Image (cartoon, rainbow, N blue to C red):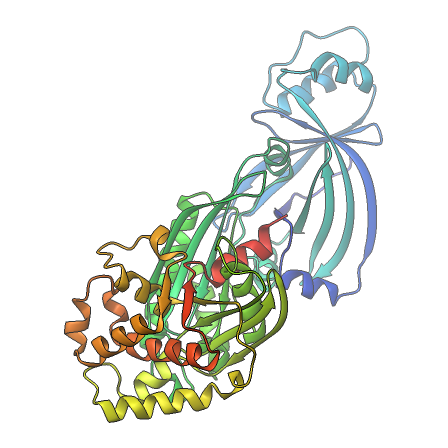
Length: 497
């Protein structure tokens, strides 16, 4: 066998790979290839496959600090195998070799003798349709894969240069994906194991974090769900810059979330940025700083895309009146609106209406005089003018920290309970009661309100005013609160089959 230099490899399995697929689609492919292979899997061992009656064995040589794997080709041989070659195959799988035979072993004999039901070796028939590219001096590959009838996709980057592989993976926005070799990925696929994924929503006020576990049947279970108020958009409206202090708070929060995702064994962590990063003139530097610290790339999405993903999440799991539906997600820098019918989206748009903007402009963080509140409400109403003249929807769903905190305050939840908040109904009377409550209290007194997240105290009045105005513009006396958010929509979009 000719001398082959071991290559550093990175690979991930999934259904969609977001920005990475867009980047590869913009390149001219080096070629496409279809193949049928048999992977031989054992509880421990190397990468062993058969293609065109040729056994191909690679052994893991080392794993570097970035998680890249260096695989060394150790054997290529044609069937029928000699006794010494069969012994080497078993050794590669981490199994004791059988007693040597006098003759050669054909592929059919090997399969019948060693890969039966309940045996130590599993034979998995795999069909691959691969498209290869050259990117950053590396071979990049996107493949459609079927393993014993189970479909998946895989994306890979390989090179003799480990630093080049790391650079390309990060440049594709895949730094948050776990490196998963073919043997491990195929075993998980055919065993139909539940898979864990994480999504991070980097908003103007808070960073929201969710780990979901997806069963083979497509059902999601929450493993972790929390938010940290980092005020990334602090003073953003005035200066259009994210400050060093805001960057540090946000980077620290994301670092903790990435570490938590790793502890929970997630296969991939994806992060999206919304209005605050869209507005910031220094967003490129901010994203680069966070990626350098965490290894995670933040994909800044449009307001329209944010609204679409929020609609996917917000309308799921709620009992709503059939017919027209409006889902809105109000954050610190903007509010996303999606109009639809049941599960179909008709229209979506984003308005620069966010709680941080009005809280800073009208000093809504503490006690507010009635005339100042009326002025703030008038400004919010003017900015929400695109909602005027629309038909009253059958159902209105509110998402985001303001809505969930108001539901928690309504139910006086000393400890947040997503099961109570999800599907909670707020009417105009309750919204107006809370607006008056927040208006009459300074920030320290607001922090003592049962159900209100203390870090939300400065912005809750502005958020409540936005919600009240949306209800008025759309002619709704009630709305339903969704505890779900953009992060849930990202998981559904990226990792659902």
